[in-house]
Image (tube, rainbow, N blue to C red; front, side, top):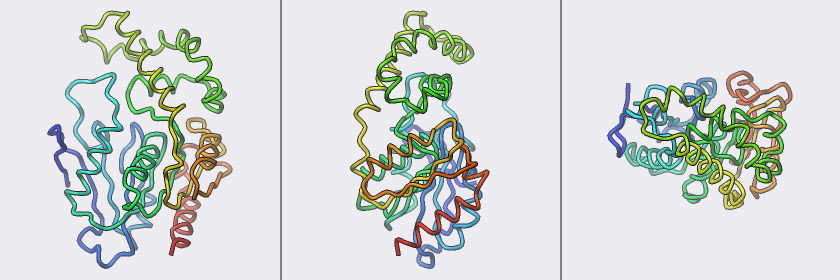
Amino acid sequence: MPFFKNQEGYNLYYEDINGDNKEQVEGTIILLHGFASSASFFKGQIKLLRNKYRIIAFDALGHGKSDHQHQLNLSKNLRYDIIRDLEDLLVFLNVDEKYGIIGHSLVGGMIGQLISMAHPKDVNFLILLNSGYIMIDNVIRNIFYNLLPYFIRMNFLEIVANSVEDILDKIIPYILTSLADSINGMKLTKDELYMLIEDQIFTMIKEINTYDPSGIVCPTLIIAGRLDNFAPEQMSEELHKKIPNSRLEILDMAGHFAPAQRKDIINELICEFIKTLG
């Protein structure tokens, strides 16, 4: 299996399909998976796209076949590592052509957005599957978000931004319970844990309130699921309003894992979108 070593010395699994035949394909597409997922999530898309494109995908640190950290860091935000590792992987694979990005969920989709703004001249197009404007890129943020009721996720900006202290008072005990095994052996007092959790969540809210995806200039396809309880369609609608050159598709009878569960219609939308770009 192919691996490359990141700057911290961890081995990260990657796939470079048609990398040896890039002159014979129609372009390059990078696949970015979500939190607690892996590149294998896109097998339905890879099976279709590999006939025409160079496909690059990798398992982020701590995911899939890649190495896992020796010790859990509760406050480490994976986005910086994922972006750095992706940039290093593209150098490692000698990617000098422009590429499209397909990102799934709140992490893969957000990484796709950030890469598109950081490297606008390199990105041909962006496809966001069940994505949004929230980055739940560490353990604390992920647990916090998973504990929120669906109606709060639907109106995240309005409710959480204005009531985060009240929400935290109710949720922190459950976060601590969820972290019990992970923090076993850590030399942190209960007050220090409370402060760490509050700092992560308050910072997350601040980032959401200041996040502006209007800097994404490439053609963007946003696909949401009407039954998505994790990244509700309202998040995709908000992204569509803010990303200038974007198109929104909301699928009935589709949940958060629509790319796997409803791959036929997702693949049809992806291919049709890429085709319109010429």
